[in-house]
Image 1 (tube, rainbow, N blue to C red):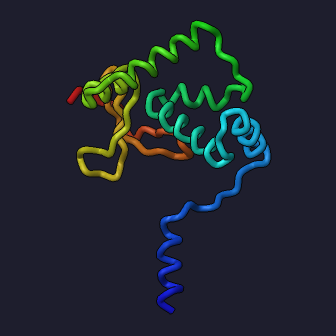
Image 2 (cartoon, rainbow, N blue to C red; image 1 turned 30 degrees about the horizontal axis):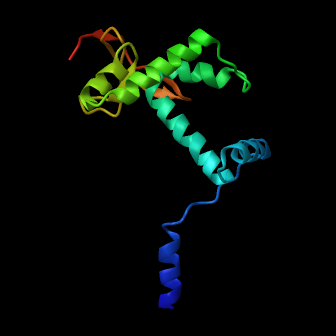
Image 3 (tube, rainbow, N blue to C red; image 1 turned 60 degrees about the vertical axis):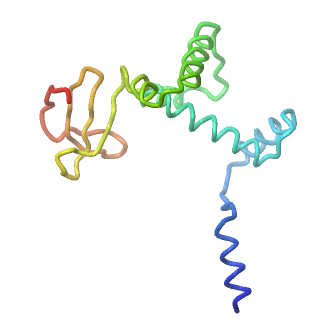
Length: 149
């Protein structure tokens, strides 16, 4: 019996199988062949990129990317702007300065500092609004208050 328990203990540290679409697996297989990665390694690579990009982009930009066609080709100026923004984020060594830069000009959400179960939206202009998310949409609970903290 202890061997079985030990076996289960070790399995907790292993990866978890997930179902992926045939389209995604085939795309990963094609890309993996040309980049000398396994299919799993290719998917993990895409996930790391996606998580990094999601931390840098505004919510509206992410939604626009999700609506874009999968064969999206970037024009030169757009590609250069994205490259420059990612380069600045990567080069930033001061974590506080990086956090300020990422928040500048974008909407930030946090739990209500007043202790309610609400979410506080802080717009780029400093306007604060309490509300909640319903079906991934922020619904204000009352009129916005304009005060910076």
